[in-house]
Amino acid sequence: MKRKLILATGLLLAIVVVLAGLYRTLKRRPVQASAVEIKIDNFNFAPATLVVRKGTQITWTNRDDIPHTVVEDDKTFKSKVLDTDEKFTFTANRTGTYRYYCSIHPKMTGKVVVE
Amino acid sequence: MASGKNDELLFDHNHDAVDRRGFLKCMAWAGTGALCVVQGGVLKSFSLSDAQSRHAKGDLSFVQISDSHMGFNKAANPDVAGTLQAAVAKINALTDPAEFILHTGDITHLSKPVEFDQVQQILRSAKPKEIFFVPGEHDVLEDDGQQYRERFGKNTKGSGWYSFDKKGVHFVALVNVMNLKAGGMGLLGTDQLAWLEDDVRHLSNSTPIVVFAHMPLWNIYPEWGWGTDDSAQALSYLKRFGSVTVLNGHIHQTMQKVEGNITFHTAASTAFPQPQPGKADSAGPMKVPAEQLRSLLGVSDVNYMRGKRALAVIDSTLQ
Ligand SMILES: [Cu+2]
Image 1 (cartoon, rainbow over the protein chains, first blue to last red):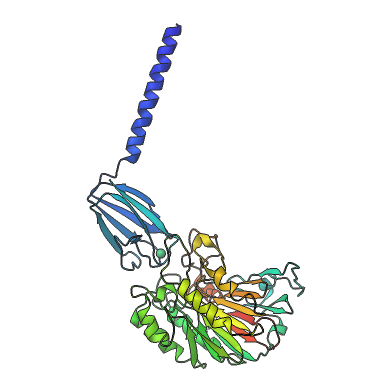
Image 2: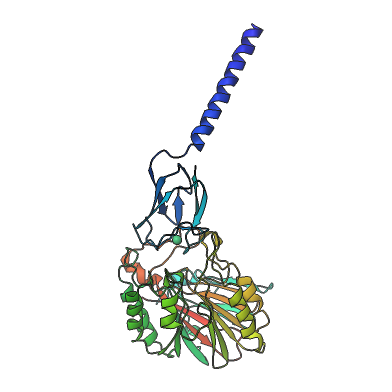
């Protein structure tokens, strides 16, 4: 009886560990699509952090009534001024973390992780 | 004119609002008209319906307009040319004529030549012929302000800062919308700060100072970037002066604060209102019913009276 309980508990624990690992992998896993979108809405980049595979095409769309820009901190990419509904596209060909902001409203920041 | 019972609820109308710590806030939210004046260190506020505020004839009178955003055409105001014209009509109708106009930036919405042209065209019909500008972030898009300076900043320093004197009042025009840093707010930068320190060095403590810039030089709401990262440094050079008035735009609503000898004031936009700090998801244009719009836009009439410690600012709406 006691053996069975230990066995069951062990099994349960193992399942939890496996599930947690799977969840972590899924969460970290870059977006699989070859093209993804970041929306600029209400003075925010959404999603603010995006993990993608190398070669993914990223498009920012300004959905505000106010112009914004998308500028990487080291100017790796830099959009022109995007008025309402205008878009900017960057293809992530090199791995790394790219932090960017809106040069007009610098409180607006975002991050793209290329894996 | 926004006058009436509603305005008066917002203010202390015992006319004796004294804060013993020498710090006092007097806020006039969009849509209200208020006169705040410091006399002998005591701030008094009146509503525009108060007759006392109207016959305050000064030694120097000028107006501030801001955020005309020419080129903006969204629902919050499809006719920004019309409301700028209404602002000019307001200025031309003043009983004490304004000697000159300060425009505190965001002249245009997208820095386009046609937008600058249109503003210049409309302002030509203003009675005051002298107009002083500072750029907003919307005026220096794409070209780091080159076009702006060609039009409005021929004899300015750096990115467009300068100073001048009128009837013993020293005016300082600052630029805090360039080279903004990720995560930050407005920025003056070390070159401009060094220039400012030098510019006021030779002035006596009794010289009244007026500083104007687009973004607020006090931290109104950092979450929305409504402030300037290095404004404290700039203000430290002005602490010794008996009367300092700081005029800003950017937040599209009127607000006042008095801190020591420094009176801060932001002007309404002539184009569209923005929400009160934190009262909306973002600082974007605020859509209001068409019949309310002009009550949320406005001009600020500034009066200087010799011997008074601060300049009197009267905000009036375009209605
Ligand atoms: Cu922006």
